[in-house]
Image 1 (cartoon, protein in one colour):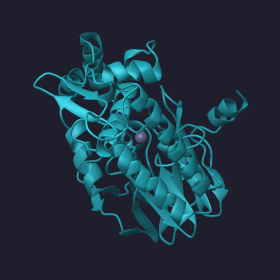
Image 2 (image 1 turned 30 degrees about the horizontal axis):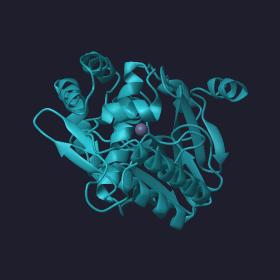
Image 3 (image 1 turned 30 degrees about the vertical axis):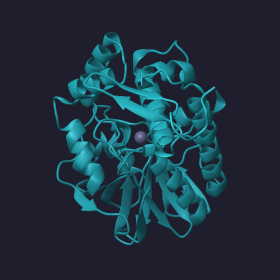
Image 4 (image 1 turned 60 degrees about the vertical axis):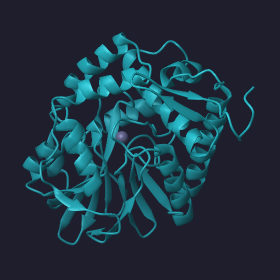
Length: 330
Ligand SMILES: [Zn+2]
């Protein structure tokens, strides 16, 4: 309660975390109820990292008044609504160019630039076993959510390994395929690649990379090896021991992989079915969607390492325990 209060108190008021790094927290209507953006001081002005949602009427003039010097560029870590959705408004308010990863922007355009995406994603979830009620809800909420996303068209595209005002651009896939982070002098501006106390959602989605959890294990290993002094994430708390946090999140997913494998038999089961075992039966449709996507990322990881097999026909994708090799099913 205390923490929630202080976060709300700080909405739209930049807070200095260390010299040259400000945190700007904006409200969200759902989920963790807030998102952190960051302001990084450079020689020519500030780099704003992430932008909140569109249509939330972020008071940019008031925010900018509290910052000494202009915002000269905007960097988007990934194409989820709470990070990219306010990009157009932030660009308009500051006059600054928007910088986004090449892969991330391609997916951003595909998802938020198309009126057909909610129908496509609903059809895909139906193949994963989702009920018609959930598919309908996905279509409805998809169109509603699209209204909150006002990304910036034709941003400056960057690649992993590039530099943005002296910050190194790192590719940290898993939570989103094209997720980028910034690193300089032991400081990681992580977006949603490393969070505490919540763990980032790692979901499989249509048209995404085939093994997002495998990608994420690589990301966590890379962060642990980099061992930054501190990590500033898109939600929740500042992480003072990022390498330890990366190892703890990896252990969490290892444990969930074991639990997922234990729910498989030689009878084919859909990601939807297994999500009931992993996350319970009582979830509102929007959370069921995340539960299915998260279950599928674990099932696909199990397939990748030979601990599960995928069976698909025209209508359904399902999973079994392995028939050859691997551990015998219980
Ligand atoms: Zn995200």
